[in-house]
Amino acid sequence: MNTHTMLLLAGALTFTACGNSNKPGTKDSTTTEATIPALDGYYEANMPAASSPGRLIGLSLRSTNDARMSTDYLNSTPEIIQMGNWSTIDSGKILITLVTVGAGNPAKDTLIFRQDGSSLVYLGDAYGSDGLTLTKKDPPAPAAKELLVWVSSEEECEDGPGFGKVKCYSVQYGDRYVDDPDLWEKLMGEIEGFKFEKGNIYLLKVNRIPHDPPRQDVGAYAYKLVETVKSEKKK
Image 1: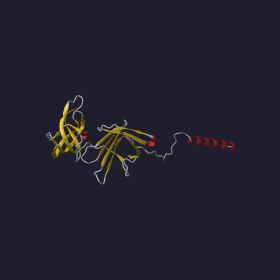
Image 2: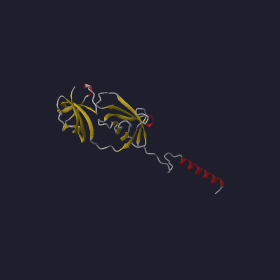
Image 3: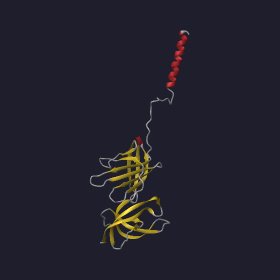
């Protein structure tokens, strides 16, 4: 083979090698891609406090972009429930907009998080210097909770269209009540084992038991009297 032919052959091999190296989709076999966890799921944080029992915060994000947050102050009062929606915004941040259920206040809370592996880190100062990091977990099973309930009256209330009337009570929660008519709210359904006498205000310890699965015709919970802590005459 003469020198001219050998040079032409070498040039062709070099061109072929360069063309193959620039083909799209060619990867180094040692390269791996990081897997980003899906955002939908249940996240939780337990925030202890020096002067109080602390807070248990649970956040559920659904693939339909619905959001639900519960804040339990662990002090024998019901959880604060907020519902709304979530979306991703610039730089991979998550925007969550929530309204408090049953508060009669349409004001929205807006929270921004960033995803850190299987956790969500709150970007803001609403949770103090310690901040808030919610970790993805399996959602907890419905559980009973003991509440302190002040009862000032008993009556019959409409339980929604088609369900008729049910026994209900005017209540406040916690170890103290405020003598303000606007602060009493309705507890729908009977407190099993409790007998109300008109003219009295009662402080009850009540076991709140979730219906699992929920039953639309009887509300989300059943209530059973644990103890009548005190009763006093209305002022």
